[in-house]
Image (cartoon, rainbow, N blue to C red; front, side):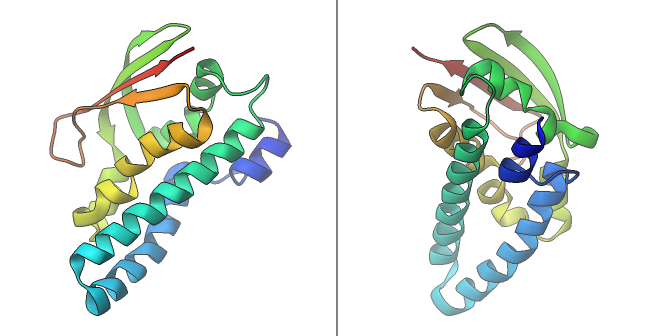
Length: 164
């Protein structure tokens, strides 16, 4: 990535897992505060919506600096940010000009949230971001997923497709 990509879309030298951990430390306190004042349902809904909005905005920043504009290829090219340091271990099933299908067989994001005592909202902090990222990155990018490790499955099944 160019320096401008690093500075506007993602801080240089910071793994995505470390970034998510920092965000989760703050959101944990927000979640606990909201639970006390407004109950679990409001707390979860607020965290979910906040993370969704954040994912859309961060995706817009990635799209704005994608070489040649947003595309499935440009999206795949930034995947190493999410997998850096083994944060996600993936098995690619299919990769074409219009599809990118893979399974996540190990997710350190899920492991980290559980270790932080955030298992009950881990899916809101992590899995919730994936579809929202597509919204902000490019409306032509669609995600289908039927299961996640965070939800108790053996793997996450990601099926991205790029529609004309």
